Amino acid sequence: MSKSNKLGAIDRRRMIGVTAATIAAGTSGVLAAPAIAQGAKRPVMIWCHFVGSNFEIFSRFLNEFNQATPDVEVKAQSFGPQEITAKYLAAVAAGAPPDVFHAPGYVPPDMAANKVIAPLDSLVKLDPTSLKNFDPITVFGGQRYGVPVNGGLGAMCYNTELMQKSGADPTKAPETWDDLIELARKMTNAPENQFGLMLGNQAGITTAQNYYAFLLSAGGSLLSDDGKATAFNSDAGLDALTFMADIVNKHRISPRKMYSDVQAWTEWATRKVGSVLLYPVWTSGILNSKVPSMTAPPPRRVKRGAHFAGNYFTLSSASKNKEATAKFMQWWVQPSISGRWAGESGAIPNSQAAIDHPEYKQFLARNPLGQAFLDTIPFAQPFPGVVGVPGVLQICSEMVQAVVLGGEAPKDVIAKSATRADAELKRAQRT
Image (cartoon, rainbow, N blue to C red):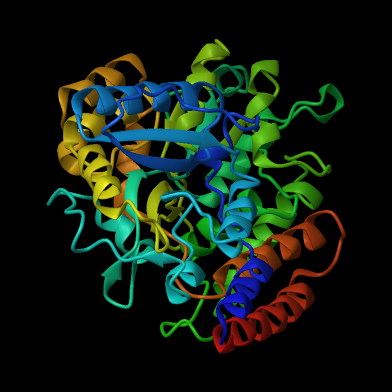
């Protein structure tokens, strides 16, 4: 396949894998990070999806690196998580990509397969205690294509004020799906627009993340072991889909309206939301809302399950500054840097050594909502790192919207969706 055809194929499979953790700031635009100009320095350009306060924090870290490194100068532009992938692919097609593409959610397998990004094994060495959760979404064909900036995963957040008012124990989180439904029923007062559980149902990445989390909890898998076929059209897949439909249409503990998880999180301050599936960078907003809250690992069905995301630095194959770029990436993965970054941004550090670092321990002391996300790490799984999976995720999110808001039968929709997703996998993997 020609280079232009490859890039066109990637563009058609445009990533939907944006972690709810990076959607958090909710704005976009092109912003230049402050940097120190020194004539002899080798330039490194990063296109990142951090926005708002996290971009400001990121800019401070870049300045710190630039101050300490005499031969490299790193600059960054922020494009926002919703648009960065499309802009990056356009830059690749034009032959002028940045040195670093900051991948939201996971490293795009299509970019690795089509050599748009370069392997990093010989350039960057991760800390020996790096979380193993990162491997399935950074390693392809035995080579690592992504350096984890930080982790992210979904855990539950509960409004303890509503729990107490409903007669529930505000110190005891639900252990099972049935427990969650029962608690949410107690906290729901529909005439007052108060609902006990809010999960995104709008087609898109956050809805796909939710479905994947409940699919794992039900004991299911998104794809077959070889990644060549879907596996969600199963008893577990149907169970997860039915659960997401029933909380709206049967139990009526969630509003029947289209919304994303981000909208649910931003409505927390109204004090009329009983529980949500939350990502760690949103905990500062929860604390700032002054609503009494607690976090806990997601409740189980067959087992506990959660979606693992995060974000990653990738190296453009066309970069002329690979060694300078690798020097910055190597600096970033130090536990002292990762621990401090996670503490300031609210994310999960990229290694156990960073989790144990004093800078991150200070964050946990200030933010009691953070510990539940660490407790969820052992059973959190990333999306499969398979070419074609972005399209599968989009189809799954459309499936959820169809049953929750469209009133279609879960059994019928899941069968049709699996057929569509299988066709998408074959198309993508044949390209």
